[in-house]
Length: 150
Image (cartoon, rainbow, N blue to C red):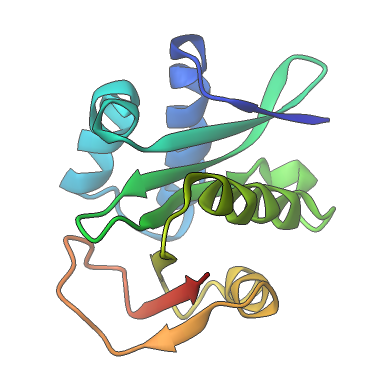
């Protein structure tokens, strides 16, 4: 398994992986469609990054770092193929995000998630994320807000 920087050829896999996890428990929202339909324009071109986990050439996981107005990154669209969940890949993707934030000198990583996503919440807490007060968000499903400062 390797984690690589996003290339345009990864766009279909990035979209499919995210549609699978979001659609399982939640409704795809307009902001999801905007980002998933144009990751190059909505994330990369705006100073963000996307990482794709590959195994034998197949995309098995992904995560995006969306540049924020305060100079930080929002960790978004993080998922692992359902058949590989529980194998530590999410932890490896998060470690790459933390490393990328340090490389890029950002002040913090921020994320929005849902309180029903217990494994994700455990991962975020274990990697140094702390709870924040709720804030305005384009996502109806977001009810947990966290950050990790450098």
